[in-house]
Amino acid sequence: MTRRAIWALSAVFALSLSVASTARVLAEELPANDYPTEARADYVFACMEVNGRSREILGKCSCSIDQIAAILPWDEYEQAETLMSVGLRGGENVAWTKSPKMQEKINNLKRAQVEGELRCF
Image (spheres, rainbow, N blue to C red):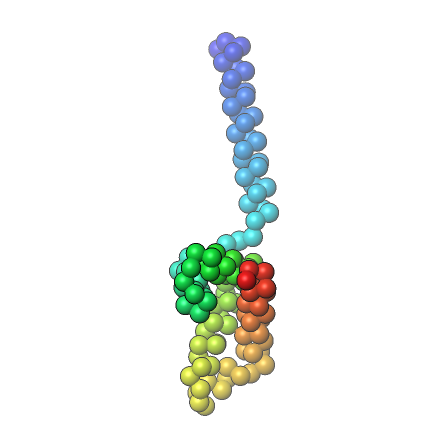
């Protein structure tokens, strides 16, 4: 092997280590994006139904769900959404959704939604 080939291989190896190291650091800095795409799309669709159907509102609604996702892990979001949905039915069968523990989950979602609105709208 010539000197030039050895130097080129060394440079490629060093570059690949640098890229791998940078990717690892970036992955550690970014929060986990664990909200399913369909859930994000549902949120944006509902948000646009309430606020209007424009490109500007699309951006604001997308920003809002991103803020919620940064605050609330997916499993907590899903639980709170389910509780809110079940609670809307009313009656004795859903009285358990009014317990303090369940209401705290709903309140956490509402606080995250308010934060999203404040930052994005």
